[in-house]
Length: 328
Ligand code: COA
Image (tube, rainbow, N blue to C red; front, side, top):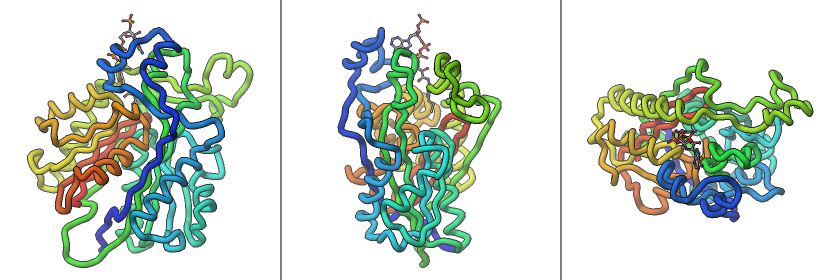
């Protein structure tokens, strides 16, 4: 069986920066409240003309360059997104055409903020089974289009962006590559975070728009507690399953939803702060993008070296959650 390696990464965030001070002018909030409660200072907002696939293509080009893989070599394109260009065709098909990945299959994965870990798990199975050699995985989100900009409970939290990863099956006796991916769900908590307007349960009408059903709805307080519990559980299960201890982790890359969630996970695992990658201050919650964006920054910033044990843990709407344990 092949080992599955991440051989290139790339990311793209829109130029427009929305700061906490900008938000102070839009809703009844303050930089102090947002920073203390979430760890966020600013987030990026896509321009009106950009679609999720446009951000994805920009990130994909960077990851392909980083990996040395050409578009013609890609067997499969996976796009993790909760904010696709449209219901169908998939955003992955638009990316496939834009980058000229002539022989590639393409489809989207919907697991909200856990989308990258879910997609990584799918990619891992395709490569390990021998079906595909080279997979391009992109997370892309434009949540700014689905935010109620008059609701201070949600509008301060989310940001736009895209991040891509190239995965390849490799042989030989080295121990590097994906050790395990574990994914979980519990649909009974679907009402904690959802966007229903336009779906078959709620086709768009004047009434659904008046009731703002086309915008994201969230019960932040309940989500917070379940997020901490499930991220800790996912981290512990990944370590136990593979015979590692918390002290073996070189870098934890958690989903960046709230700095206080990340701190609570770290405290629960008794993992020192310097072993956790945090960039929420600059981007807010970019949903499926947050982990691959953090991975790209960690790699480019020299935070990961060959042989390191990397643990990623995600959590999101669904509810969904999961982990990826990787030897770099
Ligand atoms: N500015 C100022 N006050 C705000 C505010 C804002 N942007 N947003 C909420 N508040 C107020 C509330 O109205 C409430 O006021 P009240 O006590 O008068 O009713 C007060 O702050 C406390 O609200 P609460 O919801 O208890 O705050 P919190 O400490 O739980 O923080 C979140 C709110 C949303 C930041 C936090 O719950 C969170 O991050 N949850 C997880 C969200 C998440 O992870 N979502 C994505 C999952 S992938």
